Image (tube, rainbow, N blue to C red; front, top):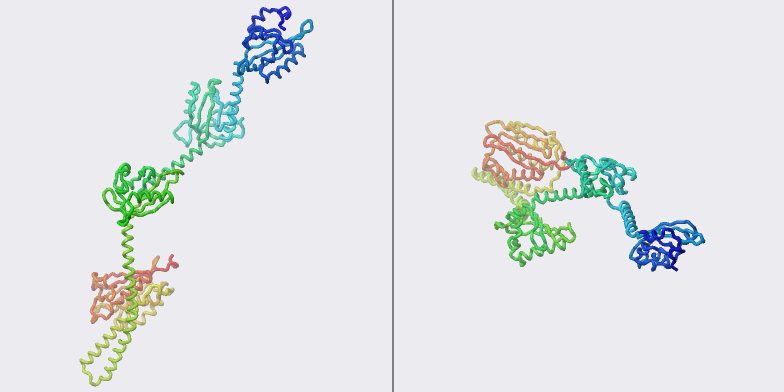
Length: 636
């Protein structure tokens, strides 16, 4: 029940009523008395609160706590308690009161609890916000994916940092970082930016912090082992103390290196693009227009800019074969569709430039795979007009060569069989003429004897010609049997055949390099040497003693032979003819021969992978040069 002021026996009751602090008296949990300040906490009158339970004014979860507090105070005279209580929802959402409770006993043994309370909603809310803020800040420090310092710019030292900062700067413990001066981790100059004085920049940052500014930074930090890293981040004042700020940063060294490498690669690609011998055009499939082209592409189509190139349609430059049923635009679209499926496509086609010049080009279509959903194609266009024409000419020459080879094979077969077939009647002519000569020896006239001699000489000449044709037709490269021998051995086999001529005509021989070891077909080289030596003797100068020199010189990839004489020589106008088949520069009555000898020599030397040439003037002698190629296994 409500008690009056006399029953409470409270001194200075007027002061209590007028107090701005909310005061109340309770017996156990029942409120016996309260002043206006207390009832105003709940927007009630004192009469509304009297005889009510204090429990009804606090939130449900707070009631158990308050019940225990009252029990303890009631059982312990003179005890006190101070704390905050959240009010019941009916008095407002998240409303709080701060209370100080104290128990005392009257003279007649009654125990009362006196409380002093005030509305603490603002203070409790701010306290909670501060706690939450500190918790969030602590969580931010611990879990932030960026490095963070709390830095005192006035005293130039690190106040706090997170673990990631410790890891980035390669320290072992957080305590090693705290207390560092920022210039301990900030080099003055760095290879990353040689022209930047980072200490000078840092001093400007300090002035900006003093002005309370937040700003972005790009800088270089030095790790504990001296390695430098690139960082980007922000400096943000803490708003707690002047000259105190957060330095929030991220290690972007690897990102920078990747970007630098990418730029380097792109620069390489750009260099290749601009300096390629091929025309390169980048096509957007959606519009079918070129979006990029190098200078070679502009030159190929005889235009001055990408804009001019964009205005060209396939009908303007694609030249299809007469039997082609597709239009140029259909051909162009089908080629692009094909490369979308196969990712690469090759073709060769004629194009007409803006100057109406026809050019044969080889086109490589490549799908740009840089992006998975790319709708762009790169065209590599190469002018192959010269190559195409050369190939056409080569194909024609191959056809002619095949015909020639076939004809030549038939000719050689004919020569071989004809030589054999002609040998028999020639032998018969010679034999029967000689027999007739013997039988008529007593009665034959001088004129008839001349006829007989002419028949026999002609038949012998024919026989020599047939033998030379037979030798020529038998020369095949595949039949060459190479062996290793001393040149002197070959010469010793050749010289006896010429001993009579050497003695008769008093020929002077000069030989050098005959101790050389060579690799060749002995029989065929003997034919070459015999033929050239025979010509030197045959075409000697009748007015002076013959001089013949035969030299051999070993060179890096071949052997060089030189056969010189002081004979009648050969006029320069005939130099290109003497190796032709059946070509003889002199009447047979003056110099006997079939006109096949030098042709055979040339064929034998070429079969050895060599070549033959001469130097000569009429009346000044002749020098023949020829080489024999060394087999690869003997090359030095």
